[in-house]
Length: 179
Image (cartoon, rainbow, N blue to C red):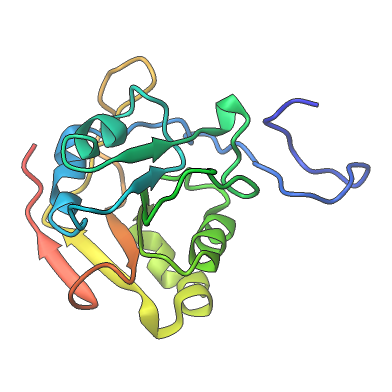
């Protein structure tokens, strides 16, 4: 069975990764550097949506040990956890299936920072998932993600933030994005 599959009524129930239209977008370095100040220097960081060439892996590994995994290598975040010790999750998950990804991240009880579009704040999901524990690292401008071919996407029609849990010093932190 293909790793990337869609659920239908004839398929046994299990975790599914539903591919969204623009789920394979990459986070440029300038969008990663603002979260670094909040990652404890001795923390082992799990990047669960990342391959070795990911900017998350490359940049965070300059200061911290990084464990990475990706669905394309059979490591579906909804059912996989690294055997290596890890302390915090930092990454950019696909925007499709966001509720499942955040529920799974919170289930570990460990800090995390996951990028998500700010439109998610108007949904009932964050209040159900986070309750009073939602923290946001918000920015002065919109993140511009990269396409798989390495070109930068046009300015998105939405802003994005790091949706965090047990990581930031206060519920909302603002930072400049310097592209």
